[in-house]
Length: 74
Image 1: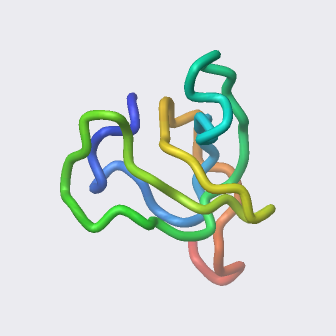
Image 2 (image 1 turned 120 degrees about the vertical axis):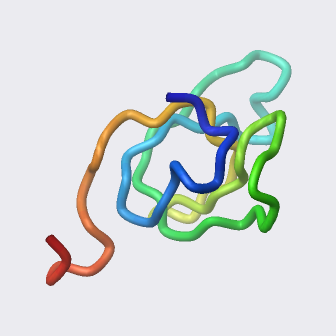
């Protein structure tokens, strides 16, 4: 799954993003989504997110469920 549809992304999933500084090289950074920053339902270059470590970038791939943002969620 790519990261162009907002409905596919939610806090707690593991994604690969491209940081602004890495857009030219296409280098990907992996992490867990903390917050979704794009309000549009679809974005051609990828939905912008903030990872739990504070890095911000556009989702290029959804890698898996990762860990839940709230431990009580199933």
